[in-house]
Length: 639
Ligand code: ADP
Image (cartoon, rainbow, N blue to C red; front, side):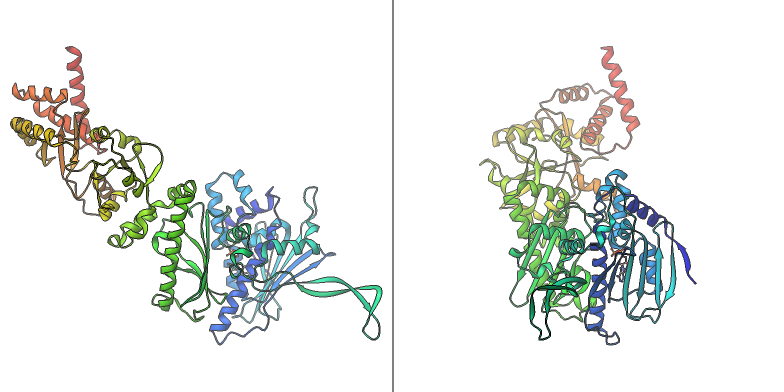
């Protein structure tokens, strides 16, 4: 008896889109089904090599068959097959990889756009419904005695029943849709069409994709000799693909387009990759790596669920999907595969962690990626900027991680915006462009470039004609702390302690003045004793009245970032209020002080709050601040 089951909601929606899609590229169904068949054979092959209880198969193959009368298209494989539960898990629900990512994309984008991306995306099994109104899946798992038939019209339900099937593997029968004005489904029954599609999408599949084809051969006489001018048609089984894995070919043998197509199919993207890194290493350990940098980061790159890693093959036999030992965390966004002739097939996840060959490969891969990025930065600046805007923050974490262990490899890959113009620059470019008298590499942090440009501390740095790196990522200041210096030039935050920007004469003048105003400064310090460590005359301000700076150690941006983390101790930056003695406001405050005005405390606090706001801090008591401002404005209007 057949059991009727309902598709899950999201599966229904996906099916609906697939069937009713106006997308014309329906031919990709074949690519998807062949790819599934090949994966299933991969799995079986691997098991047969590593698990003695799994029966060896003499000849793996994917077989295509058409029946023009019944209008069916059949794909069979002798891979691992599916058990009853696997059938339900795999075909009744949106499965893992391809379809799910596709579905996530679908949810994010507007329906219209999503229709366009069907077909470029690895949508998997469900694409069968783009061309058929009934799909039958006969399957027998290597670990099951029984075989099952899954049938569905791709609408709401599917049926599962037990069937007879001798061999382990899967056979999928597509009942093609009726031809319409727009679409001639009969085309998929034509030999030339099938040949073309296999060549176009599945040529590199490692197992023979076979079909019975008609061949015209010379007629032979009784002695086996060709009869001149007489021909007959015979049926012959032909392998349609060249079976060479794309990564086993030499770089000159494959086109960029082929590499891109392979990427999209294997790694479920609908866009070409940003960069392809394809190399072959011969030496103590031999391997080939085909690594891609996607144009867009996967939607879950920063979630805990994201699994980094490359696919691992040994002598072209698939071993595992995400071998995380092969890529460092800060390159977690790359996709691709590594195939080595020197790895044992029996390698387990546990062994992997301590495998020296793998470690060597990983080190090498890390360098290759870094060097490629370096070359991109040098030769294809625009592309690199795209890359950096998408993934740069990973590199920054890479520099910061392990107390700067990787900083030599990564620091030259960092680019920053500056106050001077809109272009990004590297640390090296910054240092090269430094005026002779500039001692430090200056940086300033804030939420946005605009906010940074408005910082009062910027005055004097700008006046000197020094450039300032603008930091807007939370990790940035931590990176600076780890780097400490670049090409012997120390990093200096313009929000932090002594900037060392005045010449000797000016400094002495200011120190003199500070002595003079000591009573006032002490008074201010007393008023703000809970908030700041010191109140000093500023050596960095020219036009603005006040600013806050921090002592070395925890900076303001770090304080804000740490404050945003849950359940943490919340250390604070040590704040110093700097006041500009050349500013009118300083004179006003001094007058209140001399007159012994009771308003002095209020005004000093106002000043402090103002400085806090400029630094992007939240005020402790915004209502009080606003009341005092109001009072002040009323007073000013009465004058
Ligand atoms: P994906 O291949 O991206 O995982 P599919 O929708 O194409 O998504 O397939 C879902 C799952 O169904 C596969 O992961 C696999 O477990 C199973 N499957 C599909 N086709 C076959 C097949 N020919 N043999 C064995 N299992 C298969």
